[in-house]
Picture 1: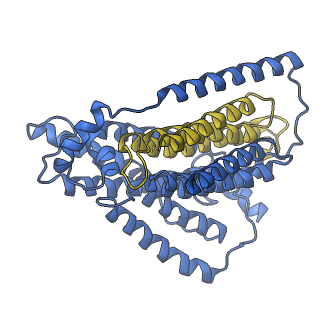
Picture 2: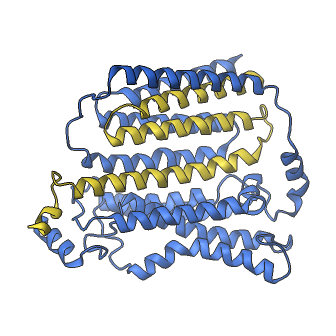
Picture 3: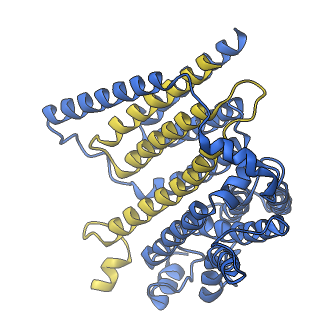
Length: 319
Length: 104
């Protein structure tokens, strides 16, 4: 009974925060409500026995997306455009979404009681050969490795597009809200946490995605401290880092076909090591991609991706 | 156990509806990105609710892996949308920025 009270409170708060994030007056308020919504969602997922997802949502869904949206607030300088949508259109969209939601709710209610499918039975049988003890990591990097491989490809596409879209404009310099002291404490802590999450992913909640997000958080800290931490990184090195995860994953997968197995089918004896290797590469790539997306394709003010001289000049003029 | 699943699953469905209807409104792009992200979180919540297997029991890991993939793709998609918006703003004739300098 007490658990039901907690569940109801959590769900009602989630709904209220969602409405606040969608209908609050200012964009800045909406972003802040969105971050709160994400954090509450992480708590809900921890309650639903999904600690991996709670970690990922807190670090990526609420943390990095929040930082991304906050830094994008500067772009939306124009006042809100007046509602140009005709009244009938608004009514129609509301009616259609209401119908869809009702249908979805009805579908959800008819789903229960749930029966265990074949997939989870096969999963339990195959778990001893997975190379890792933690089931989520086993699904991500062994049983459904194709999904993860293609996801890395999607991420690479997004990161490369962001890199090429970045206009040659100066990165807006701002007062650093974090002191250098805090950065010096936070950076080693974040790095060690990322390493720990990567290592522990084999037998407990954690893994490449959470570790990569924590490493990307280090970029956010550096950026907030106005620290040009990436000035030494060249385009070639950046590209190599971005592609490392995908190439390593593909390489390990293809190696299995050469050795006589199927693509991405690891031999049980070395599966644990191979998974850790892939995860390490994926962590670096994911951290790089998320950092790049957060920085809007601009690693540093002199970033040579569009018109180097122009970019440098405008930067100098503004600073 | 079923009531717990049902409560969270229905909440997820409601959040999807809320986010979807807000994403279809005529609003600044950033507000729409937030709305789509919220609808996405609703989908994830629905998945996680269905994966739940009762107190103290391990949940179904397959939906968890899918949702984990989804979270990371969602942030990449949001970042891409923001980058495109920024570029559009930068290149538009009314937008301020170095685009005017180079055309002059």
